[in-house]
Length: 579
Ligand code: VG1
Ligand code: CO
Image (tube, rainbow, N blue to C red; front, side, top):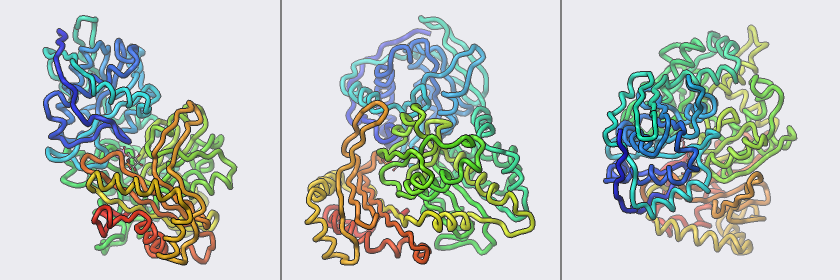
C-alpha cells in the first residue's frame, strides 16, 4: 500500500474528558473529525509506541464502530504501525481490551503497546446518539493526563494526517491474520475471538468450581442483563458454558449497535427489565425473583449488583468485596496491597480499610488514577460510586469481574451451608452494615444543563466553600437538624507515585457527623453540561441502619440544593436521574 498525506485544519472541541472523546455520531462523521483525533493521538505517543508497534482497536460495537475501525486501520498502517489487533466483529469490552494489552502474545511473540477503545460507555448508541474513542497505554489503562493534554494540544495545531487509502477494508467478522506490504515493510491485521483471553484471565482469578457449585444449587437463582452491550459477547461463554447457568438466565445478551434503542446504563432507572425481574422498581414482576441479578453497561466495565428485592449501592459493593476478598477469591489469598475509591464514592471502603489495616487512597473521578497506584503495587481493589468496580488484574473497571467477585462471596458464605437457608445478597449486606456501619448514599444528576449555568453554579460553590460561617448559617436556616460543615474545599489530588497534580476535581463539604456533600461537573457528556450531586450520611447505630435511603438523606439533599442554588442557576426543580 501507499501512504498519502492529507491536508486538514484543526477542529474545535476535541478535548478528551473523563474517559476519552465522546460526541454525537453526526459530529464524528464530519469530514476529518475522527482522522484529526487519531493522528493527534499517534503524534502524542512516544515514537516507538507507533512505529513498528502493535495496537488494538475495537469496542462495544455501537453504531459507527465498523467505519471507525476501517479508518483507524488505514491510518495506523500509514503511520508505521506493525500490527493491528481486532476482536471479532470489532467487539471487545473495555476490560477485555485491558486484559489483551497485558496478557495476549501473538504467534510471533509480539505484545500490544496500546489500544483505541471505541465506546461511549453507558451513553445510548445509533445514528443520532453517541460515539466515543479513547486511548489506553501499555499497562492496559487509560492514557494519563500528560498524554491526553498532548492529544488535545495536537488537535489545535494539526495540519495533515497520514492514511493508506488503497488498503482494502478488513473483514472484521472472520478470525485470522492478513498481511500487507507497505513502504516500511509488513503490516498485519489480526482478527481474533473477543472472549478467549478474558475468559482465561477470569479462570486464573476465581475458583470457577465453587461458583459452578453455587449456580447448580436449587436454592440459588441468577439473572444477568447485558442491556444489549458488548457484555453479551462474554456472558454466555462465562456464565452458561463455563459456570453452568441456564441460557434463560441471560437477558438482552445479544450486542446491538443501538443497544436495542435503550440506554445501556446499569442502574435502577435504565436497567428496567432486570429491575422488574428482581422484584424492584415501579412495576415489579409478580414471579418469584432470582436470588442474584446483575447488569452491565455498553462497554461492560460497569456493573449493578442486585439481590432479591434488594439493591446494593456500588459504594457498598466495593467495600464488601474488599472485606471478603482474601477469604473468597483465590487471586487475593495472600492479602490486599491496598484499596482505593474515587472522591465522590462513599466512605464505606474507608471503614473497611481502617478495620483491616489496609493502605487506602482517595483519587479523582475516572479510572486512570487507580492505574498508577496499581502499577506501583499499592492497590488491589478499587471502585467508584458510578457502578464501577475492579482490581489490579487489569487497569480498567470490570463489570463481569465484579459479578464473579460477588458470586465468589456468596459461594464462600454458603460453603458450610448444607441443609440450611441460603445466605443471600441481602444477608451479606446487612451483616456488613452491622459490622462496619452503613453509609446512606444517593446521587442526583442534572443532565444537559446550559453550560454557562453549570459553570456559574460551580463558580458560586468555589466561592461559598471558602466561608464556613456562611455555609453553616445557610444550613441552619434550611435544616437546623443537619450537622455543621467542619471542612470544605475544591478537591485536588497529588498522585503519590508520579507527583502529578489534578486540580478542580469537585467541591466537597465535610460535616461534623461524617456526612459529605460533593458537587462536580461530569466529564463524559456529549452535549451541554451535567451536574452531579453526591450525598452521603454515615450511621453506625445498628438500630438506625435499616431506613429507606431517600428518606434518610432528605435533609441533606435539601441542604445541597440550597447551598448550590440549583434551581436558581439551572431552572431545574428535579434531577434527571437519581441513583
Ligand atoms: C462518569 C463517572 C465516573 C466514570 C466515568 C467513566 O464520569 O462519574 O465515575 O469513571 O463516567 O465511566 P463523569 O465525569 O461523567 O462523572 V464509563 O463506564 O463511561 O468508561
Ligand atoms: Co463503561
